[in-house]
Amino acid sequence: MTSTQLENPAPSMLHCYLLEAKYEFLRMLRTPSYSIPVLAFPLVFYLMFGVLMQRGHDASASRYLLASYGVFGAMGASLFGFGVSVAMDREHGWLTLKRAQPMPPGAYLLSKLAMAMVFIAVIAILLIVLAVSVANVSLTPVQAALLVVIDMLGALPYAAIGLYIGTRMSGRGAPAFVNLVYLPMAFLSGLWLPLQVLPVTIRTIAPIWPAWHHAQLALGVAGSTTEGQPWVHVLYMLIVAAVFISLAARRLRRVG
Image 1 (cartoon, helix red, strand yellow):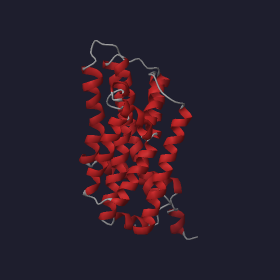
Image 2 (cartoon, one colour; image 1 turned 90 degrees about the vertical axis):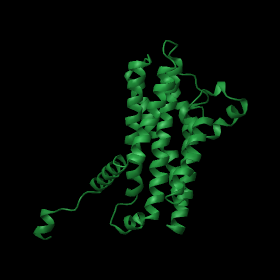
Image 3 (cartoon, one colour; image 1 turned 120 degrees about the vertical axis):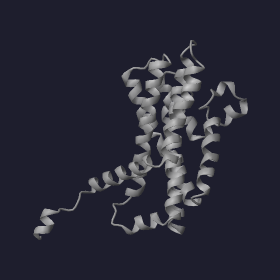
């Protein structure tokens, strides 16, 4: 071993993953078209519907919307973080360049997942601060911590769906297509309005969407009424993630 090698040892695998995640987060943070709407929309909607419209009323609606808008924030950070950025990286040749570099296996995708989870954690914490400080929602420290964790871990199926969209769409078409998935799924899963006030048809098909299952987990932690068993919701979300990851992997192997 030469003296140069001793002075400059090869970086560890963990260090490579952490660096990739760090720079992916900084990249998206410095992209206003991603960072501003992803961070602002859940907070603004919660201020409007969970705080201002519930002022002086029972805090149960504010509690419900705290959980549901946390899921809404997780959806946006993951779907756009994967769907749009992967499509643009493919279109501009950045994904091909990444493959040619001596990167650890999966570092590209894991860095995007870590980036999305950091954004989700920030959204969840800010929503909790708003709920506790101005919406009269009472949460224990354990409940607050679990809400953040559930929001973060729930990113997996949306990231998988976004990844598949990114492998199919162009950089220009991806934002519109992501919105066609993002907004209807949020509404049909009961994230904007409780399903009890929506038509029976919507309530019947709600369990199709991974966001509904995610919301049930978050609502259970927040202390609201839920449906189904937690393990069923977790299993369904994992199945959705596995299906779309498989589809995206096959697409990437075929066309890059």
